[in-house]
Length: 391
Image (cartoon, rainbow, N blue to C red; front, side, top):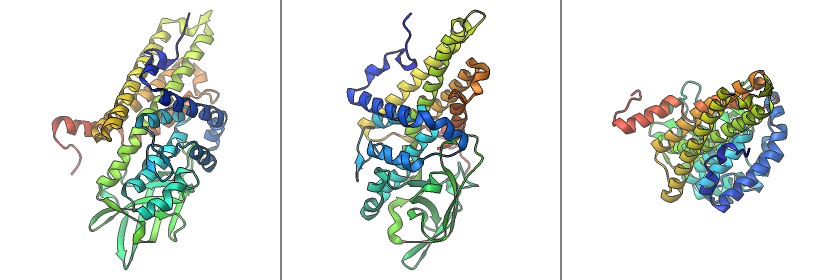
């Protein structure tokens, strides 16, 4: 009997261009050669060679690949999405490195920075020589950035930043931090060199999820930066929220990669693991699980591809459109990971297989860049015209 891979069920490859398939194949080879052989050890140890990976990804043009100029590849949204999918099929933490670098830190500078700031940071970040992070989330203000506590004030020709940020990917290793802070006039963004006096980043230890990713807590103790560090076109909360919309697009695709890897692992296991004298994949209950998961994976891919095509044709996606993709694809991906775990039985919790690692990682993906509840409210507000967020 001829079998098919999970995403080949509907011949979805026919919806991609030759160039898109080539980019996907390149990233898949890199993930297979550079990430998969070591990622389980990185996860167990809670360490990742971020700078080495960044340099390799930079050489391939994967960092900020959907941006133009300053050494960026200027690729399509779909090509970027496929890249995220292949990286997250290896590990969510590795995809987070690329997403935070390109879609948060680089995008914020590219979109809102001065020409001087762009020239200062973007070429090195695109090459992977400089690492960036994005400081918005705070210990007491995760889903409510409008009430951020971090403050900035003018002092002569400088700005002084005070406060703290939490759960910041790449922060312990970053060369530049995009920091969002509130002044009397509103929210401002700054590209802060991490070597600036008063800036410190502590590695967050004892994580049970995204362990193959560097995560930090940033402290800003009277950090003084010149006016040139401010992102002049960023004024108000709309600026950092637009960066989150940018990053969420990659998550829509990335979550599919984790789900696909889980499903492929479960199918392989089910066709080789024998119980009661036959492969467990030959039992109706197992096939029902596999069929349902494959259907959801196809639907998630079609949703991601549609959003990518819209973005490539229209230039941007509306926030509620991105919320639909993030809510659906991450929610379904974590369901797939959990169901695949049951097919492997006790082996499902073994580090010999990637499923539990993916499931644990997706617990973070489910809540970062907007929790499911936040995305439900974004969609609900668009449907009803009524704001259900606390005022």
